[in-house]
View 1 (cartoon, rainbow, N blue to C red):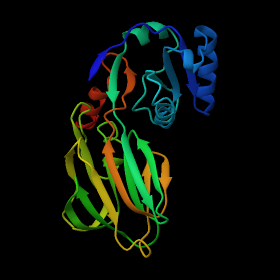
View 2 (view 1 turned 45 degrees about the vertical axis):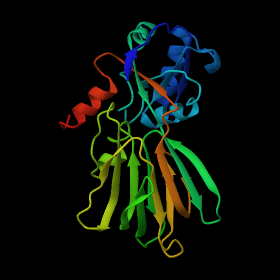
View 3 (view 1 turned 90 degrees about the vertical axis):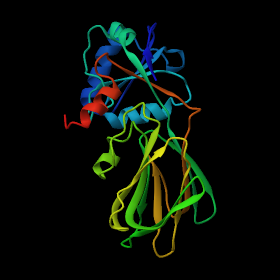
View 4 (view 1 turned 135 degrees about the vertical axis):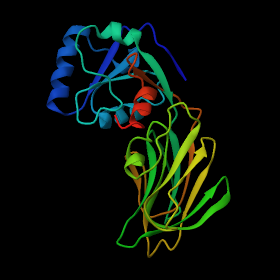
Length: 260
């Protein structure tokens, strides 16, 4: 869902540790002030996609819209950095609503860890042994054995990130889908993943975990030696990401499919 955004005056700035981001933040603070995040109308993140993900996680339950400006390395989730006319740009921006994934991972001690992911939840082998995974969708076994370096579940917003590097499909931002993508699969040899409804619950069970330990990662939160991981989209949590007109996330994702 995309809709116009209006009425942003009080801005809270956050910046990565990169010198160019810190310098940009200092200049912008002098021009526009720097409100406390709790009192701000909007959060402006200065850096790359890593900083943007951190900011989205930090303010996930605040309801604050997030507007990124590129002062880092990778800037797929960021707008162009321009100092002039920031308030006008914010008020002309459009909101893209993104829902995160929720991961519930049970470790070898029986403890359940819950984390959220904006891009993807990934399972990786922890040792030289390939992972041996069983995959269930909504409680029904769909793959009795996947031998691979790992497996990931990606949102549309994350489909152009690690998912794309693992040869997964690019998903339009408004499509009600998730990507289930293997990482360097060995068996079944011809299985390259699946597209799932975004209401699906994915369960991944680790086979022979003592010999073939597996870690689960939700964006940047890692759980080691997992036995079972349940993944679903959290439709109750909405992240409001701001983009300049003509440079929306859905347009960028569409362009990625044509190699631009």
